Amino acid sequence: MSLRSTLSGTGVALITPFRSDLSVDYPALERVINHVIASGVDYVVILGTTGETPTISKKEKIEILEFTYKVVNDRVPVVVGIGGNDTSSIIKDLQTFPLSNATAILSASPYYSKPSQEGLFQHYKALAEASPLPLLLYNVPGRTGRNINASTALRLAHEVPNIVGIKEASDDMNQFMQLIKNRPEGFLVVSGDDALILPQIACGADGVISVAANTFPKDFSAMIRLALAGDFLSARSIHYKLLDGYDMLFEENNPAGVKAFMYEQGMIENILRLPLTPASTNLQERIKIFLKAL
Image 1 (spheres, rainbow, N blue to C red):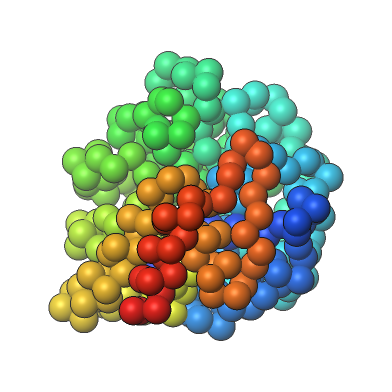
Image 2 (image 1 turned 30 degrees about the vertical axis):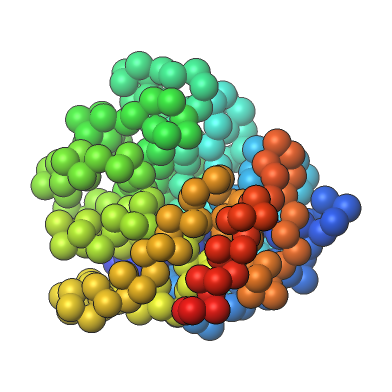
């Protein structure tokens, strides 16, 4: 089975639950993992931005990884987020993190440094050559400060064998369509924009790595399956049911929004590590009202 078929559908960018003392809340993480798998997501993504990885130590990352493998227990694929803005440091992580139970690596483009397109190409080429697993690009210019142009992503797709897909979160539909139109056979293109995934599937996307699937895993996964099957009428009804929820998820910060939702659902404590803070009282109240109506 190709990686494109293995990682089509709904991937969920898992949160990292914390206790009030800011330690990792492993019982809550187990609840979340079991909940999303039982609700129909196709795979999980651990140690992504939604997991607050900038505030998580390397020791904690390894512990979270090993715990996730144990809880998932081969029920769905596990994709591991390993990125940053120091290429040599990422290569070291790729060579030392426990990855034998993972399916692929998702690597966000370098933040803050703002490399040129050639710098991005050479960065990812070096990672792909060092990685023991297939590598997915992650383009999220709203966070990193630099877009991976479609031409650069496609050059990587065509020239670097171990680069097998991209999570595209630029909000640029034309760029998204250029990736779909010009990708090599078998190259995975998934969305990082929950609110845009329905039209992006209509354009040929393979699926999504979603924040919303933490808190609406059953409905969201059903919507993606319906859309991929071509039943856009049914998928659209779910999309519009959840649409206001997507806005609230990202209104103040991710993962402050999704943690506020999951706190109201009784899944986790509403704790984030600084510099992130919980959702405002106003947003929390609107989330409570939205969930009650849902």
